[in-house]
Length: 306
Image 1 (tube, one colour):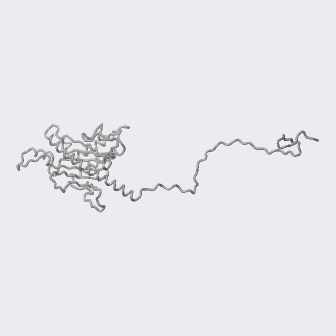
Image 2: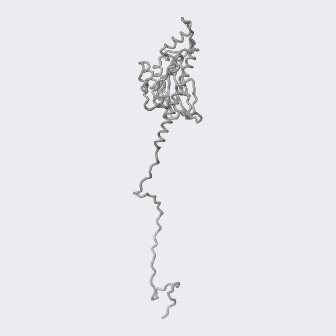
Image 3: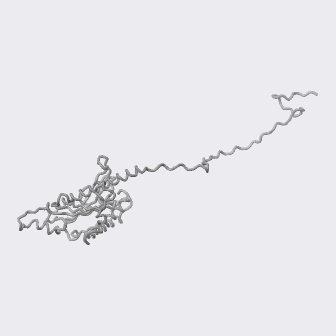
């Protein structure tokens, strides 16, 4: 018997041929959907080390710069307060006896803004308020207490999207100085200026300037003393006695923190607790000034006004 064809490697497969064997079949399965596999680090691999922190030398340099910045700010605020107190006295003397006569007290608000051209990279801005002569502006502690209440009321009535700012434009607490601040200015402190000193109350001293002197010695407003009280956001308290006739070695400045950044570490400051020193009236000034300061600082620390 012959077969029509032989089983070759390229010929057709004849199942009747003695050498034929069925070819293995391949099971066709549907392809699985592609699954994204997230990379999982080996469990035994330690996490990457944190970036190195500042070295002791870097920390020392940053501390030195910070101390120099604050010492410079204390000096600038002190000089600004002295000038304001002197200008307040001159203005009050010129208005004395008129319907626009000034009261003996004033308030200062201090702000700083970055300024690359300045030695310490900031510029000091000061807004102030002078008050007309009236019974409610004659008592400094009470006047400061009233201002703290007014500030708290303005803060409480703040509407959404429009925060109150002590420099205005609405319900401003100042009427002179740097009223328009840069957008990046920050609050750094408050101060009170008074023409009431150990030499007497302002109204008495101003009247004496206009009366004939028994000694024929003429005095002017430039011979009168003044006083300032400052509180800064780093906790510094500064008491300034502006005395035109003080000896050259007496600057009249007492501060709870140094105005000189190069003070040695062992330096003892006798005025570290300045706000609890002095007589009752002085301590009351500090107490009410601190209430105003903390009210403003707590509000303005939340961000810029819009």
